Image 1 (cartoon, rainbow, N blue to C red):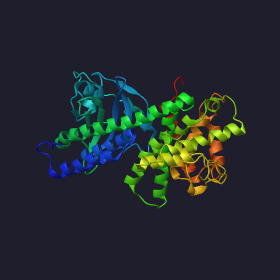
Image 2: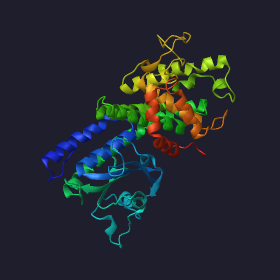
Image 3: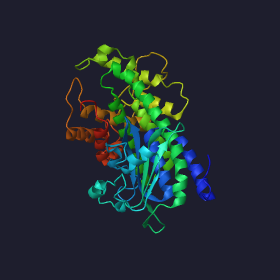
Image 4: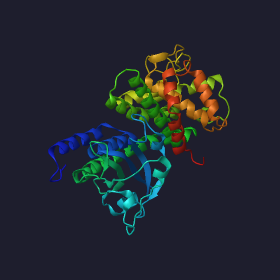
Length: 413
């Protein structure tokens, strides 16, 4: 990595350490969050967003805004779903088209002869006032355009909005290039998981790519809120650990039903209610899924195993599969089940996320439940089927849950 001439030693050192931090994350959303955080720390930006190239357009993918969003919580705006054409009519489209960084001191004072315009509609809706902007391309090592990052409103030490300084503008492309590599890796990881779940979808029509993305996103956001509640209750404040766990749980939760590939079609595709024998066979998908991750080589493998095996356990007992002493032996599932905190947190969270999505989604054997009815059930089952603290976290971010549902819609809905 080459540091541009004239960049201070302190800034260069910070940049090198921050670039290295990107390699510790696996999921693309966590990487986008980290990239924006690092870029804003370098430049002092109040806000920022990242657009990724998808199907020849720029798809809005992540956003930060310290002025509008509550600190340490996810705003529903993160899951907004819109795209921008790759042409010169917009600022991000122009940067994607030309490959050139744009530094704008005042977005409302652009020369009318420029080919691009500042879209002030978001400012109008939110009451935010955009002024200074730094927009740059994210390119991989093969010079392939991955996306565009836009930083907004640099602030000085007194909190005043100022133009982006030239030193930050000169060093930020190094972060952007390394970010593009990390983003591509994160996209590849998620795509591999989605392809794996395509196999399950061939067997079980309910296991769609949209469903597993929703469950993964719900689980990550519920965990973030749960962790923040613990911080507010005085139980630690390890932000890096929380971020790493949210990164893992999003991916692992997507694989919660991978074991269904081992369940017969006659059971998976039955349009009506399963009889007792069929339901007994269905319970084995938890064990079969856990077996996929027996030879764990990473934290992700361990969490995948925990979630696959335990996401149908209940807080007060009565779930399944219960205590399985040896997953490699085809023994009957024991009656005694796990309860309370014996159930891994990741599984308690994914269990709630999965039940919620199953109830609000149409199935071949039922119509979707109304939102209010689902929330009433979750409240009722707090302390019985669900961990009360997980329910509390879920309810606190219900607006984010709805935004996730809207972003990852099933085809045709």
